[in-house]
Length: 445
Image (cartoon, rainbow, N blue to C red; front, side, top):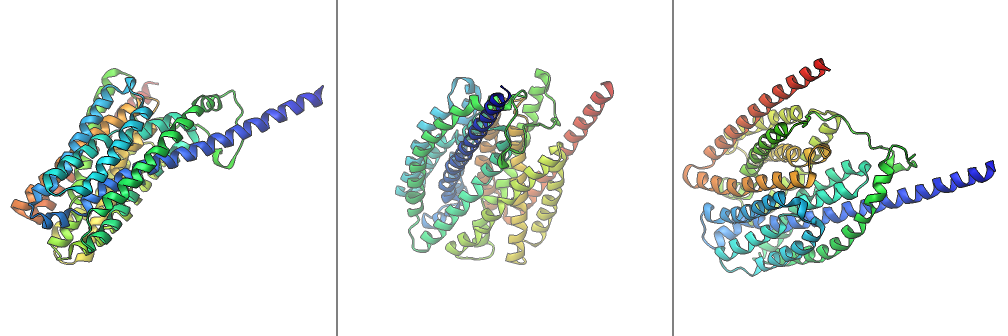
């Protein structure tokens, strides 16, 4: 009798281990699929930024005219995100993405057929319109379908999508512009994006079947089998911010969305003009400017990795953001003073700035989404925070274009510095208020 019981327990353990390994493999496949979808969407978007100097000279455009393409993209992108936030509970995000992602890929391909800037505004705007749900939708699907032990990895990998996509778009664009074939990147990347969207539809559908299995494994009364990739159990750290009332939740959304807007604006103050800076200030040819600009997206992947790692170790993600912003402000001051002196030194400062800005941006858009998933609707928060960020990304390049056209590069960097200081001071005030509030709660308990 005892032998039979032992045999049954052993068989049950083996079955649980096999199921656990399978759900982890499916989880890794879903992470890869979501990463590829987001990365290719960013690659398609990045072609416009990479070729901005070439197109400006090709069609004889002002800075405002060329940068309005970004405004068209991001404003439509943001409007859809707002609608997703409002109707998030009525929308099946997997089905929504299955419909919109292929359409976005088609418009990306059509970008290569443009013969004028107005046509490019229209196609680029429509690309943004149908890309709008990708980041928030993929993150919501990952949070819903993945084992908890894989969420941190998913967070880091998804934050690499922008950097990888931008590197690819800048690399292909630099090569094609050298031969006056600026249209080719849209055809290549748009085609890959379309093929990937078909694979994503099937992989996401399959992965979501494992939701109930993950819920069973997350139950405390289930003894989870040990595997190399599931040694980290689903123990959650206490949140630095507790949203226990509707009033707190409302204030949280107002403050965080304002911060998301400012940090995204700060990021695009510099990132949207790297190629223009190299060609206008330091006189590089367009294709060489694009190649040199690749350094920026290659290195920005470091930012999210640093900030996410720091926030994993310390629950106070606001204080971590303040530390990073202090370095960003120093880099901006040095840019104001020395951007004309030496191209290599200026580029180094720009890289430091972009890496940190992207890292802090990932705290507002990504770290909060994952770390506070028990207190927020992850899909809704991701949608509205990305909506606000996309509005900032759309507005800021046009504003900077106006500043450049009327006041030059020095004033554009001074403007960026002032915005960075305001953002950091706001973070400091919020950190003091929340820290004191938490101390009072602890004393009361």
